[in-house]
Length: 421
Image (cartoon, rainbow, N blue to C red):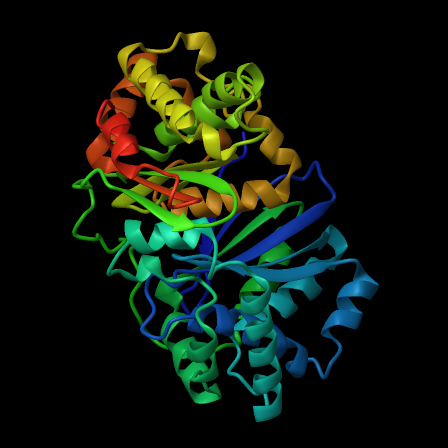
């Protein structure tokens, strides 16, 4: 049985690793506990993500992308509200080279003023081309997370990005790239010598001392005390977004995973079968389960015809009321993806890397093997899922936002339907 193991570099950086010699590639991630949730300057984490990759290219005298293409490797990054993940992947014989590339993310920024300006313009283009300013998600998050950093977009604003300088980026890099606030995660097929090489590359970098961010989200005043109001943004189409507050101190990520899948995630999920397959109210439904170590938000949204708004909200309320009243049977618990298919993670070093890195060391789930993770899902009972549903799906946890014709949407009628939850 394989399990997660750990080594620590001489400069104090933890490297967690999960070997699978049966495949032909590797996946190396650098996780930083940083993001828009922690920022003093909105958008600076996302800017640093961009600048760090460009900086690696500068250190390599412009040979980063030619090298990646020549060696068949992928190197990229993603910024979230609570973390940044840099990653590189390729075939196992390229592990040493990949180690050298990703470790250079820890380097001081040597970019020229013109290179910083170019990256700034790219980020501003990303902001302009996105839909953050007009999306229902942004409208909703400004209400759900009012007065907290979670209401911000990850990319920041055009005006804010204009004010971020090279000096600010370098100061922020030193602040968040500390041994305490980062870790590497390695999955796939690699040797002890490969790990030693990665350690050596990391140890070339002098790191500032710091503290680890704890993934504790700021809590807005209205959390768990929603007033039952419906919020409408005018548009020429109709979309609804339900966001339920979750108290993560009384539930686990595995419980919320199963709850989400049963309601939204599978081919036989409750909302899809009833509202799409049976009634044709919409074609598809999207959602997410946003979670931090203290709070979270259970979110789903769909688009309907303007005349179907009341019917849609009533159907959602009816489905949730039924779910709260009756524990599902064991066969309907949607555990197969986590239990029967547990070992499929071994075949996907990318998925195994993110799952173990995020669950164990951002969300502190505490398992050290695929088997332990599977057991956490296997042990959840139908009655416990019903209990969690009753904790979450209450009017005082719900923020309902809509895009549509404000003149034709009766918010009072919708608020009366919501109260029946």
